[in-house]
Image (tube, rainbow, N blue to C red; front, side):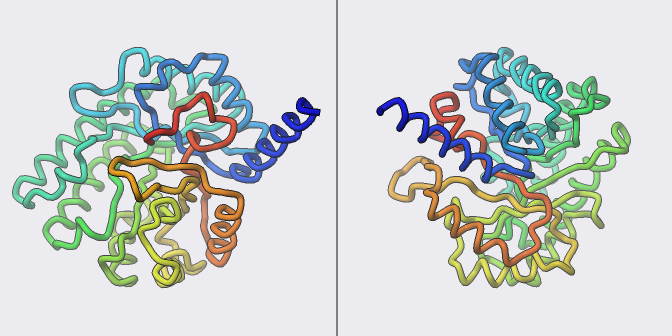
Length: 306
């Protein structure tokens, strides 16, 4: 009896996970604590993604922090994940350098911000060089820039100009090395600018479509009300608007009552409501954030802080 119930629950989890990731990319945000995940466990996770119909995974970053980066062991693990994905005919998008202090650093005046952005470019291009050996793989599917763009920090015209120059420069250098590979960048809305202003900002960072902008839907962070989402998404995710090329579906719910970031997977009802709400728009490429919260990652990838 108990065994039968457990099998039924596992089947239910599998069906739910398949419904979540089918025809989607899945973000994996590397954490140092993941070094304990074994090769067999990674094989199991990637096999579940493949069987569930996922397109592949997005490694959100391959270096984290200027001095610490990721551990040598984890760098090797990420390469192993890539190779396993290739063997399973899954695609992989490679994230570059991520600064844990990015959002505090970009608050600095424009006069010094340009030097910070240059350092970001140098460190990201270093990651491009390290991963060039994989670009001819059938799994390799492009690059992900970790600079998450929002509508708060880039309201100043001078800062916005610096941002566009930064993205143009790094885009040009990456395309020189890998001219056929797409480049992705994500963005989110905090409600600080009008829909037309946000559209102009995202259009500018897309660099006439040379960067693929994927818009975070905000259901996990709960930063926008339902009315605000409708106001922004009806413009940005309009079928006639090519500014945004994809949508990040946040498969988590941030717990607001705690001081540190904590999130849990959404309930079935919450997820269905999210899908129903987003079905009104042209979402483009669908990306799930994140692997850590999916049912078959529980007990393997710790989700206490993603």
